[in-house]
Structures are given as C-alpha cells and as structure tokens.
Length: 406
Image (tube, rainbow, N blue to C red; front, top):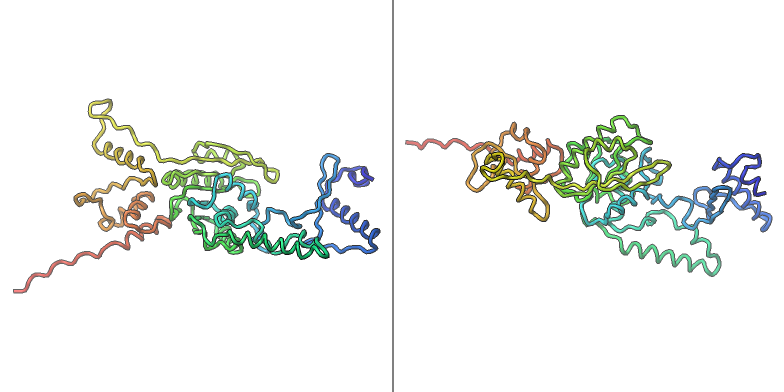
C-alpha cells in the first residue's frame, strides 16, 4: 500500500536510500515477471533502463533516466581515477566559470588549483567540448528503439556525436595557467587533464602561491581555496592571506577579475580585499558564496605644484608621473621600473647586465618581471628562476687591453 511504502511497512519514514532502491527494484522485477513470465537481471553500472526514485513530503515519483545511470555532473574523465576528497563537482566548476563569463578567449589562472577540476572544465569550455562527449558509452535511450526503430536511434546518436566533434577546437585561444603547492593534488590534476585530453593546454606549476609568477598576466582568476568542509581548515587562514597578496601583485597588473568559492566568511577576511559581488550557492548541504573581486592598479599619488600644500620632492613627483602615464595605457599596464643607483646611459634605463647578484636578490618579483619584460625574456617561475634568467644575460667581464709591444 502507499502508506506501507512510504513508512517502510513499520511505521517509520523512509530514510535509507539502499532500502528504497531495493524496494523499487523488487517491485519492477516482480511486475515484469507477472506480465512476461521472466525476471530481468540487474546491472548497477550500465543498466538498460535506469530508474530514479524521488521521495519528498509523502509523495514518490519514479523517473526513467534517459542519460544513463551516472549523474550528468560526471563528465567521464575521472572514471577509474583517484579523486581528491575535497574535489569540486564538475558541474559546479563549469557553472562557476560560466558565471565568471569565461569563454576561453582571455588568459585564465588558478594559483591554488588543487586537483584541477576548474582547469579541466576551463579547457573543455575553451575547446568547445560537449560535456558528455568524453563518456565511454552511449546513453540507454539509444537501446530503447527496438525493431525497425533501432537503426534510426543509433543514427541519430552518431549524428549528434559527429556534430559535437566538428565544432571542437584543438587548442585553447588563450593561456590556461595553474599552480599548486601540494604535489599529490597536482598529480591528480595532471591525471584528470590527461584523461580529458587537455593536459597540453594547461601550464602547470608546482610551488607556493606567494612565489608563483604566471607566464602571462591573467585577465581572469578563478579558484577554490581551502575553506574547511571536507578539507582540514588548519592553515586555511594563511592560505587566504597569501592568496590576497598574490592577487594584489599579479591580478592588478592585468586588471583581472577574481572569482573565488568560499564557505567561510571569517577566512575571506584574510584577503583584505573588498568583494564587488556575492553569489550564493548550495552544494552538498554547504552554503557557499562565489565572491568576485575587481582588481585594478593602485591610483597614482597626487602631485602638487611647488609651493602648493606640502612640498613634493622631485623623485616623488617623477615616480607619480611615471605611474600616471602607466595608468593611461589602454592595454596591459606595466609596473614602474625599479630604481637602482647605477650610472645610466643617456635616454636608457639601467640594464640588468650591470646589476650585481646582491641587488637582483633585493628586488621584488614585480621589479624582476619588469626587467625580464624589457628584454623579451620569459616571465614564468619563482623568484629564483627570474634572477637566474637575468644572470644568464650577464656578459663576461671585459679583459684589460694588452700593452702594445715596443
């Protein structure tokens, strides 16, 4: 009876999913046996007729699933692979990217990529890969045609797959960059990317976020930093503080927009940034927020004329004028070149060849990047890599001219 079904026959509401599934399976098999005289077999992995039971407020609805037994949020590139305990669902990662307006045409970076779900989904979006194209087998509805309709169902499926493959790109239009400090999580990210066929499209880096320098200035930063939940929250405050400093250093250069997923208001305060929007998300019983931060270069200090208000030194005025001219650049703003007390050539800055190793080590990462950019050298790597790259351009010391022989 309806009452016995919903109360499990013992007066208690249904709360056990396995018992509910077993009840539906037995009812379906018994009905077929009475109608057809045979009992069907059960395949939990790849059933021909998947059924989904939804019970809510005393009402049950039984659905025949067209897409297959697996949930649609599972793309297929994690099948048989180890999954991080705090990994994002593929559908949530894709929704977060689409909410950020990502279409693959702007440089994207995740400085704390974890097991890489956001990056793999970004690569799939950038290459216009259909979400179900990586699944190993066709959906069950292809098998339901029967008789003279079987060929038509199969042909329709093959046409849909061919159309999805025809619009797929071989490469992403813009760089996709990633960094992760934990080698185990980074290995999972590489494995998922390889299974999805997009590993070559992602620039992976291993190291602390504070020392990470992306090879291209990102226009969009999307990340899921540690905030507790299924992940140990110890050290999470430090991670958010480091991420905040990284965003101020690397995000402002490209005027990037950062979209971060968080489940803790207390942790987000360590960014020391003001969010421009907050989008609520309910995920597996957690109330989360997608926080957006619009990053822009710091405004140049106000320059006063001589005798107007407080006096301004010539050096401060020159720095402000340089910063103001940088702000006026419509494309990618460059940071002010580091000031080094070295003799300059007329009309030229101080070349890195004249800088001793001690002075290079004293420079900050943005200053080193500016020196590299001026010499058309790669910008990726940690601070030690940047210094080594500059030192490789050091010329050998000129030899003393020989005295002419008498």
